[in-house]
Length: 123
Image 1: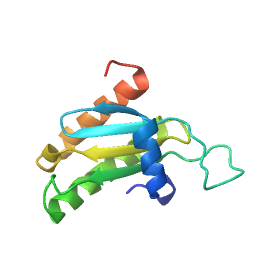
Image 2: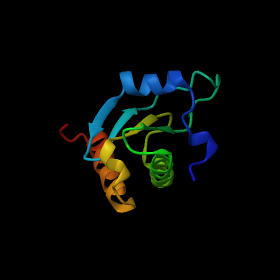
Image 3: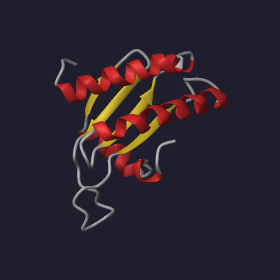
């Protein structure tokens, strides 16, 4: 499970990551990354933790499928949070095919998106 301090919860933070961050897409996911922003909700702290949020719409499937996708994505992000710059905001948006994807496919798509965002690859 993704620790509480690494969860993105506020609407403004989601909007910041999506509107001002870089984007990389794959077959099942779109990842938005806003690198190294300071946390406006915690004044006085220099190194804010990396925070991640997830968007899984009804197009992915019913409630059971959506929750399964969110649980898988949270589990995958738990291992990848340390790879991101401190203070980053990450929004992972599941595309309709994510409901049919297994854990390994989601992991591969997430890794490919992060490699493009962090490694400077082509979009």
